[in-house]
Length: 301
Picture (cartoon, rainbow, N blue to C red):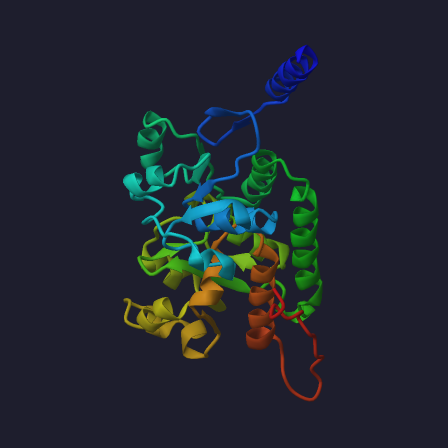
């Protein structure tokens, strides 16, 4: 009997000794005695990364915008990432809630006794760091392999882009307000990795709300945006005269593609392929003397 009691005490002390802390983007450190098994994710990029790290089965609830991979469709939706239903989150009794820094619900959830880890990527470096942070949170080993795969995919997309298309001056619209992808955003950094030139300068921040006149003055050669944004662009003052719109040098992304492009997670390599393929189709020279370059397909992702 004493031997079993000693073994049990040893096991408990060992578990406590092997606990770990995760520091989030607010500077808050959260202690875990064991890897969380019931996770609520309130940001699509975090949901996708958790699944890419083979921990989808630990998710018990997500925000209304988390829609990939397909397995998350069966999970309870708990409202928006910025305005989740706190009562619904608490009712799921999660071991941890992962969510954006922008959401003020984190303070209330912590006050109710829940563990909360707040992470918000803006740059490619942020995205890489968050993959590793989630790997630490989950206590899994796949973070480095995932990052290698993303990096290799982005480099392959860049290498496949025709040389004649490199240096194309691009305006990327994130939202029709309009908000643009700035030079320092993960989208802007992917554009740079592909050899493209972002017409939104680095001084405006990662995702600035811009004056539409700025784009008229910048005169991009190519415009990338959702179909919803493109439908409205010609009605903006001066935009109908933009050569990119007039000549059809636009990348119109559907809703699924837009999700891939604006989420800094495990599909960033697919985002690079989407961009590269569109640039190759719209900007590469055509005709008898043109060279064909095949940008890898994203269909298998």
